[in-house]
Amino acid sequence: MAFGVVSAAPDSGDGAGVAAVVAGVCDGVATDLIAAGIPEDVASAAPQAHALSKWLGADAGVV
Image (cartoon, rainbow, N blue to C red; front, top):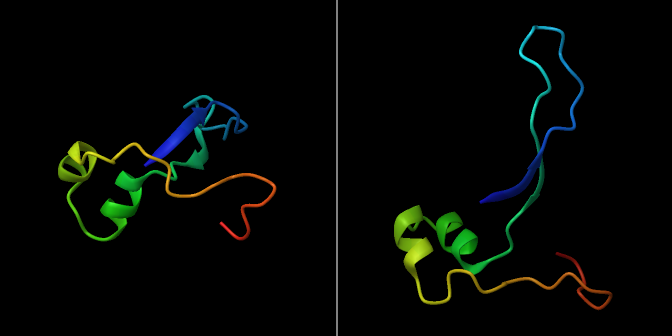
């Protein structure tokens, strides 16, 4: 699951305007379930779906 879509890429010159760039990927349980093959609607409905599965702090280690 991607998040933080921003219009930051330069115009490609094809008349389509500014391209969207994905700023990051969700580190939630639902994303892990989807990566394991669970359908997105089932993974998103899981009780822990929106809990963080990775830590982004000074002591996070390799994420």
